[in-house]
Length: 361
Image (cartoon, rainbow, N blue to C red; front, side, top):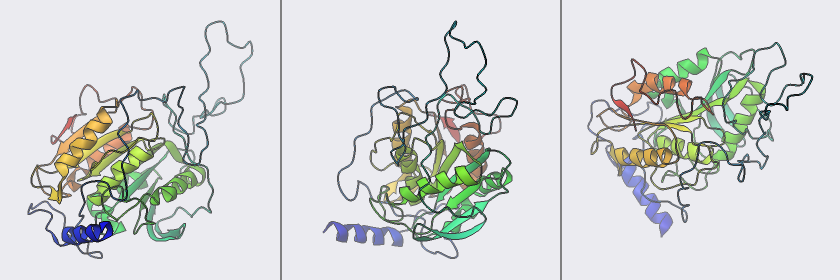
């Protein structure tokens, strides 16, 4: 009965019109259909309660671990006065470069935990790959930098669309990633599992692929472990938000376009990624659920844990936030993992030139 109801609602959503706003993007030429039905509530079983408010750094009693079970690398301790060694230690600590060299990655107060490579890694070059049995994964890769400075972005498309959707709705993000020698990944299809967003477009099983692509890109393409981000539209926007929650041990920031949370999720670690929710006007950005409401649910969940949140209401229809892609990229650039000063350099106000549709939550 549950499966029949899920299928019926999905079919209803696919045949529904997202909005009549003139700023709504056209259906993807190769995929057709609407950019995303969503279903309220959690499919496939009970949900986990949202974790209580906590600081933005891991606690000593409950340190975060990677999805593979590996403990997070402990940062080099700060010595108290009088404890300094008589001779400097020439061995670099975790995240440090050898003496006289520039750091190979950005620094911050809190370190991400990157999964261990356990699969055969793909070549990071622009094209379409099959990885861990899933075909149609689109990769956009810039020239590999000389050190670990590259960003990585996971883009998630809407229902009925395709992995190439980012070209229309996140062009400035793609350009920024390529210019800095980074990697953009966009899935076509899913390995299944708990649907998370309320749809079957992407599932919990896809998290294992994300883990391995992150591990491989950090090892093989000089991706900065502190510069891993996610965005997407509609069902993809919901999945991007869930990814930030369920992989808070390494996702630095998320910017869902008509996304958010339809139901609570348990954050994977004590760290809270930065969040920028982009949505339309209440009553206009609607496909079964009102995405202004799901965005507000995510805003409260992230800010309630001390995370930095920006809410952007463009006033239009469903997935009409493509014009804010440049602002999303600026947001990503300013919010690496463990950003200093925490929780954001923008706490006193958004930077000059940022969209007037946005405000700090």
